Length: 438
Image (tube, rainbow, N blue to C red; front, side, top):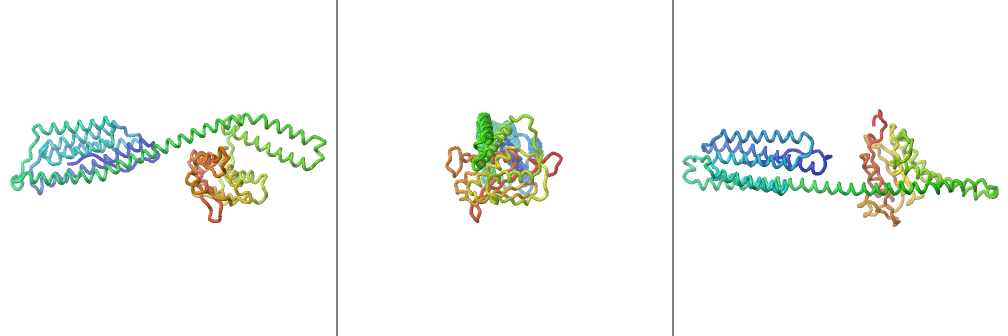
């Protein structure tokens, strides 16, 4: 006689607690199927080759109840929601009751398989809360107490009647082996489920902390953008006045410098406007409809501005173009990566755009010093930088978190030819325009 159970795995996208609870319920379902098979085999052997008379009707009725519990548990899993501690406790209590019923009709405590209560107690201690675990212990003790009250005795045929203790010891050995194997096989899987749950919870907490950090940085950036708007406008007016001043108009070198200053101020104003738009403070701004090729080309052209011609190489291997909705945050984080690459490798950076199925793949390469082993290990964490500047190391952190919201990812590596490469994987379905096919 045996008991509780498993089934396949649960959806990976479910929350950590729900995922662990569903896997544990699946584990109980599988174990219960093994119990049903073992009980049927035991009934067949005992009443067949061994020739021991047993009441098969109540034993088979208990097996039918276990099958019904499994069917109900499978229906519970198919609902797709979390499996609660109360539901796990309920099915384990049914298992204790079913085992007690079977033992009552097959010798009671004289049946060596009475030790299977221990397996249910151990599983309850691992899967359930402390209060529920003690409820399983109390239920098992109550079942043992009931078994001591007028159980149906086993009538042993002559070959076994002469040495009932020998038969009991052999049955106890089989029961011990059964408990040992099931504990090793299934308790280790339960422990793995719990470890996976703890790891997923830790990852969720880390992600929540990172997102909170991003929110605080966004508020800071939005406030700074508001404050920078006025001085930038003042600078723009002053530069315009200087450019029109007669005494300065005759000096070409000064006019060139003023033009560069004006371009720099305009770029700063564009950056500030982008920050405010990303923060939701730009009024009347509709999402910009463009194409993936135009989006990437604009990023490259912006990176080329103010740099020596030929230092930014763009390899367009994307293939068939697709209409997308341009996202300011995505444009900003990719632009940051290109700026960082230009900073460490002013003579050359390479931007390669390819397509891998439904994913857009953007690789940004440079000929700089590359990433250290520590940087690669800490990739995506805030303030992880080789530049040594206070507050540095946020570019890749923001890249990872923005891509995560789109369902994408990023990775970094060092190039064999020297330098580094940042690889961006962006699902086209997350940015494709409505009505378009990715």
